[in-house]
Image (cartoon, rainbow, N blue to C red):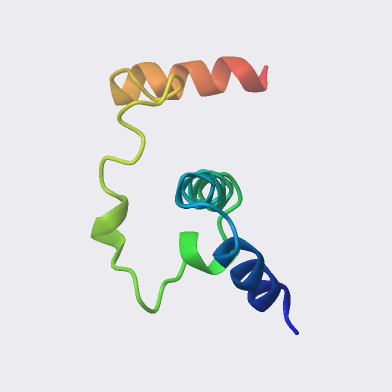
Length: 76
């Protein structure tokens, strides 16, 4: 029996509320540790999907020339 099958069997015996907690935790883990292919799957994901991906970044939140200068300063 695979791990996934064991997980399904075990969670089916739990009350609905506990199943929801297991689901929440599994979704958390999925976001925290995504599979490598899900992030950079170039065959199934257009480059346009990455546009705006750094808009909330603490590092890349400035004008391009300011960001470039910050990177250069880090290299020194």
